[in-house]
Image (cartoon, rainbow, N blue to C red; front, side, top):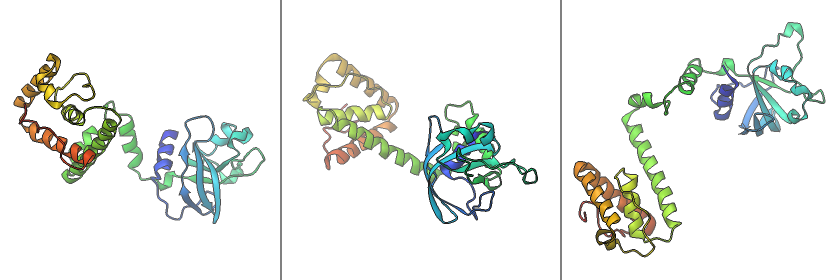
Length: 260
């Protein structure tokens, strides 16, 4: 178990919040877990908590063991004086030995929250499986067990998000709208359609009758579509969606499959 797993637990709040108490019996309510700090200092910044009905705003520090606070000498580091909660996987301080609680530089103690007993037994195993996977997409092996409806919903969402990004990008360039709609749609849907951006004002018809590289590009696209006829309807629908999204009406000069 690593501190990275604790960061994951805290950032996404993947633990049982029922009767959330510190190791000293203080009632805790998480208003906001804070923001992950990638620089030196506490692990999370600007957290908001209610501890015994008193609101605290400050930092959160994570350790696998409670004793690591002292081992790392945070009690002597003023950068940690703003810590309002110490989250740990396990509290290894033994009450019978009267071991010290974590303190700030002024000697004030801070509450400690132990997460091990509040974390699902399989969560750590699944986390390790994903983070230690050699695959470029760690969860790729689980794709087949996902419900078809969820897959369809996620693909639709991804398509709309990509469409919005591409439409925004097109609006940033002074180019002929129809040309960009066609070119982006071919490229986004995997059709080999590779040539330099067309100059502003280039009419769509010039693509078919203009420079040789453009004609070659459309010929390459036509060969591809002949081999993959199922793509034609997808490309046409995509161009139509782009036109509606950008202009509010169908602004396309032709539909793929009818002008090639």
